[in-house]
Amino acid sequence: PNTLPSSTMLLALPSSASLVTTTPAAIRPVLRPRAQLLATRTALGPADLVSEPTSTASGSAAFSWEANWYPVMPTSYADPVRPNGFTLLGKHLVLWKSADGWACVEDACPHRLAPLSTGRVTEEGTLMCRFHGWRFDGAGNCVEVPNADAGSAASLCGAPETCATSYPVQEVSGLLWVWPEAGLEGLGRSLLEEPAALGSGAQDWVMTVPPVSYESMVENSMDPSHAPHLHEGTFAASDMVPLTDYSAPAEPLGDEGFTVAHGGYTTKNDGMKATRTFRSPSFVDVNYELPSGKQQNFQLFFVPSTPFETRVITGLGLPQLPAWLPKRELLADLLHAFFFSRSALWRFNDQDRLVMQGQDRNQAADPDRRQAAWDVATPSDTGVSTFRKWLAEVGGGGPFASSGAAASLPTTQEEVSRWNVHGKHCPSCRRALALLEGTQAALGKMALFAAVAAAALAVAGRLASGIVATAAAVALSAGSRWAVGGRAAFFGMERELWLPQVYAR
Image (cartoon, rainbow, N blue to C red; front, side, top):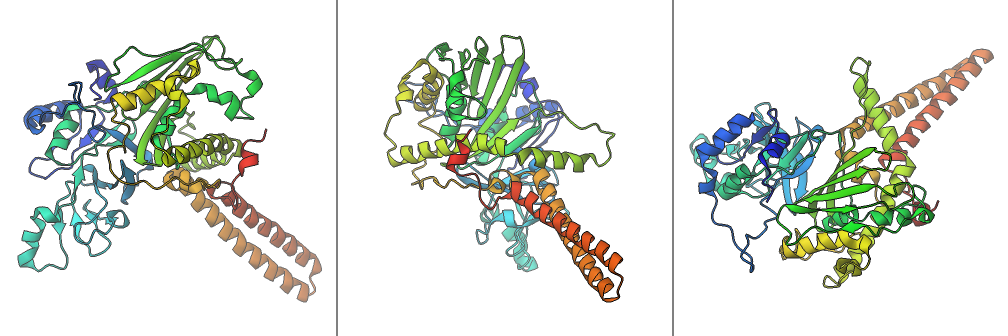
């Protein structure tokens, strides 16, 4: 579904990219430069591993949500010395850095189905289950059963029943991609396809995981006209310009996605030329050409985790601190935490989230209910209508439409922890949190020491020194409280913004 022109494929998979396919060791290639990737494709004969695709009623090959590459996290977000658990298309999976590179298996030990994401990565690069110590290599093969005797260990490790289900992994443009289709057919198809085009290439990626459906997230990215009404404070309804210039692509829509084009929707961008490209299954590329001639590009990935949770990966292209700057990583972490603790940023996100959660709740209560926008109630609904048409005609109704699982209704709470949505996934935020907690503890101990010293000095009659020590204790205590407040300001406020605050000017 994501076969690209050769020139685009070269951009999407630079020579520095690495591909690690996690299939049984006998056929599992370790692929790094592009030349080796192409050579291995020829050697393995991936077409021989893939059966004829099923067809739709119209005769075209059926779109498969599993048979695609998905970016599951920025490489910088993945801990190389620990297992990294995540959910993709309802599958619980785990990534880790094996001896051969990044590897991915089902987050379930075959022994007792304990989550392997709670395990640890050994010095040899194997993934050890925390429950009973079973170890797995990057192909998912069991390589050690600690409680087995020497005679049975070999047969246990060689049995298919003791292998962890593995999935192909690829690292491209600073992102880790997983092909969520297991088995030889999954391997064959993964070798024939490329990740979605990334436009300008590598970015500084930021990931959030909001409790919102994939469908609502993609629709929102195709609906620019909501901004003046929904995002109070950033925009104003009085600045709205009717979005009448919104063109749909030619039909029929194909597996690869579509591109729509539109004009301005506020007085600030009236007259611009914009395109929004949906590259299946998860990439949205937005390009603005403003009347001033300025170009703007926004790259977004919407990766379906569960029916009501989506991994959103955004390319920000933020300026980098100079390499010569002392404590560069520390300063970068603090700047990142400061940026993401701004109330205006979270208010903007919450304005979207609360509306989309409400949409999900209402749609889940009556899945067959049609939204007027799906039939182009106004020209500004063209993007939403086109995506819904693609879902219905090509995408089989959506990533979870055929799962058969009864999805629970999405949360309707107004309070969603910033830590759960972003902080716990982000290495910069985790490091900043550790710094704040360490600072809080150190200042608290110093404040206690200064208070004791002040009391001792007062008893000894050294009032002047006692006053200085008291002032120091007060200042240190205030600093400790500041650290507590800084932690709450980003890593989980005692109370997040509530509805009137989210939509207040």
